[in-house]
Length: 292
Image (cartoon, rainbow, N blue to C red; front, side, top):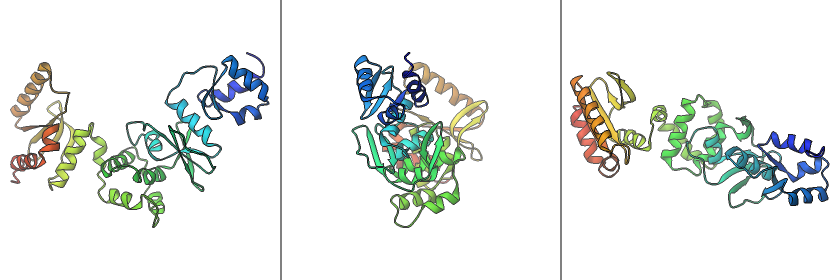
């Protein structure tokens, strides 16, 4: 490796293999040498003025680093991307969201939000909006149920700071009303749900005014999806694909038999029943709980 490549490789090594043209100039790389490195395949442009160094391999961290470099000094991950990086949501958004005090146009895969006076936090070696700011920004984009889940995850991860939330919920700020409503309906145990079906079932119980079940609780050595311990009622939820094989059906029947032998009423609901026939599910549950 040539001596001029050593500092560039060191810079890129701290940025998941990405470097900005500005950094190359600051490292003393001339335009002629930069052009030669591009022609030789040492630099590969991944975004305007942002290059992969030495290879074209990509990955989530490298893509995020490239987006931050593109947005300029002071940039940070924000909105849904920040929510994912804080692990408040489980799917990486298809478009990377960054906020920056600089003027910078958005790209097809990078949404740039021009904003000043934001506090940057550092999480897993990348700059990101604070958790409170992330939740407020996420509230401008996400459906209410996803926002509530993100709030529950923040609570579960012990990232919620009531004082920071109170300060950020200023009058007129976008997302404030949605975030206030989510806080009003906040259920920390949503973070314990392991699937969208479980979350929808919990929300159905809430709408129906049922007492809140224990989620993913252990009964007689078996983990069950929902449990009303006092009433000795267990609910098992059959997802759209997970319970369709003969072997899985046999295991489900065996579990139900063991639970009934231990004195529990066992109810099973499918995705279609919870989402398409909620009134029937609620009526069935209320009878089993002695509320019908």
